[in-house]
Length: 243
Image (cartoon, rainbow, N blue to C red; front, side):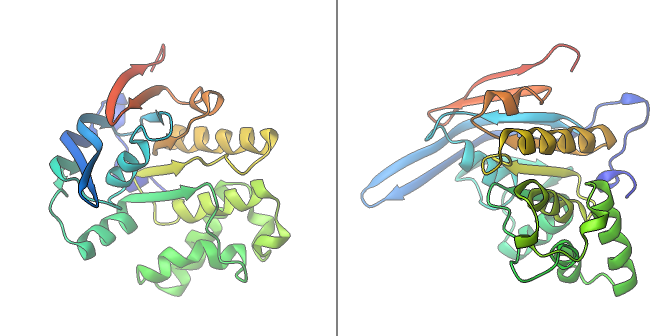
């Protein structure tokens, strides 16, 4: 698939793909305001592997949604791949999501009556990629996650781990710079979960920036950087030895 998002950097040089300054998000609940995220600063270099952690109510889902351009902040500044996305409209954000970010969710979000091939192909259809190129890229994505022999199977014919691999292939097929995974092992047994984390490790090694949102310390241990949130604030940000 080449260098993810065109961001392969020779010689190990670091390059920021995410820059956030003073990111806050406030929701109004009736007469009350809830501060879900408070003045968060974050820099993420291309090819980093990050675990975003925190208890329920810590703000990690809100932070994930803003990172993934699924939501916009109430205050602050966000640059993604050098572009200011803070004040973009819905259509522009949708184009960025489809081009820059691959999403993997706990519940897989696969079309139940569609084959693995058709599920993976869907983002390319939305992007207007021609049929021949779509077929090539879908096969390549399924091969990358070890499912080239399950192309025509529907989700109910696949194990939980295989369904999540299909979801990962779908996230990969547009060659995004960033893979954003929300509790990707939450519906899997421990063996399948470990296999999925191995896939994320492989994707990071090949050049994808991987951000995994999780409450599980075992899942977080696969990442090379761990960011913890509490009460809407970044409580800690540490890199593991050698990262």
